[in-house]
Length: 126
Image 1: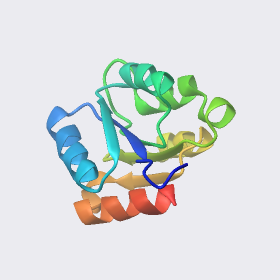
Image 2: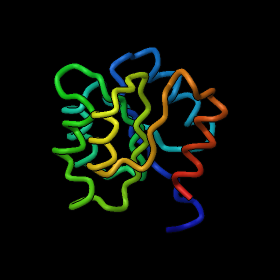
Image 3: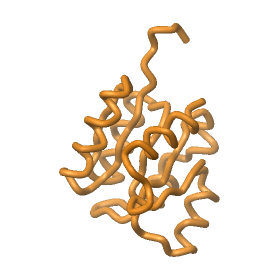
Image 4: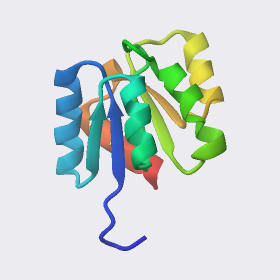
């Protein structure tokens, strides 16, 4: 990896306004950012160009975050991709499933300020 390589982040978020806010925040921090609004579209983007990190919502139409992790086969086929589940959904079964399927962090949206999110992303990528 060269010093000029930008880390790439795939935001998987079904609320367009939130996805855009995260995109602006992360691009200002010099990350290369792409957006998918459901797990199915995220699979397509992630398989076209593997991201360094996936910022993943759990509750989405078409394909949710847990199904995305299952289909993407993170641990088996993409072990170097980091995943931060970033959701307001805090059911313990889904949190456990996300970790079992390879998530590195689980962060509740309501508890993370933009500055904290940037720090979590930087820490996860380091």
